[in-house]
Length: 266
Image 1 (cartoon, rainbow, N blue to C red):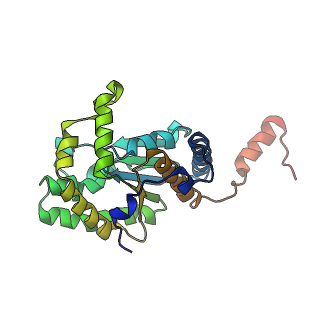
Image 2: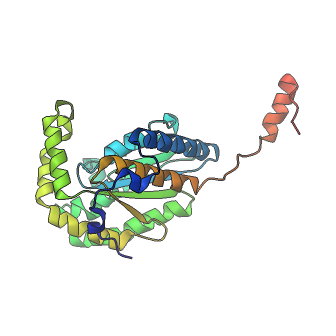
Image 3: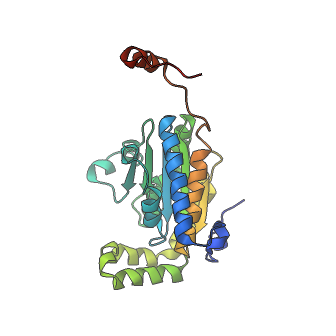
């Protein structure tokens, strides 16, 4: 079924996504669930990649901060993706992302991603039409390679209407501690909303694959959207780790026996 962003514009209520009617309680529950999932992910030596895309001011950063709040910082990295450097421009567009792929027990979180090839690079003319159209297949193959090696791939898209986006941009301007987030680029992108809409439609059509599907969320009401996304991510992580813990390593048991007379319990 094709993804239509107009299906994600009603503005979720908290009771749409959780049985708990208090945001604080729902957030704590989601974060504890994520912490358990992350711990199991580490214990079982799993690997995961998370991609966050969406409109400017749709709430990606807020979700990422809350998602990682109780995670062990040694086993995850957040990569905010901006314009490529001169060195990166001289190579294939996926080169810079290969450098950031996670190893065993790690999670890589991409705030923006390789989808820039078929979004901003397409719209701003940084890639030729041949290049960005070829990008769909290159992205699908890249993601397939990661999944084939056992990596959990989670792709999140946050949708916000023009009205919601404008209110958030104005709020940033009105809040001294948030003004740093607002740039001229936000307004340039706003002027090209129609072009981005078409590019997102094509992106979903070409890259919503069986092995790396998109999960789209209504971000017009930030708090319920956060809870919905956090629980979705926890569910995806949980689905890819065993429910039981591994047996104790035989060599470690032997060392413990020699060191302090450890005996295996029945």
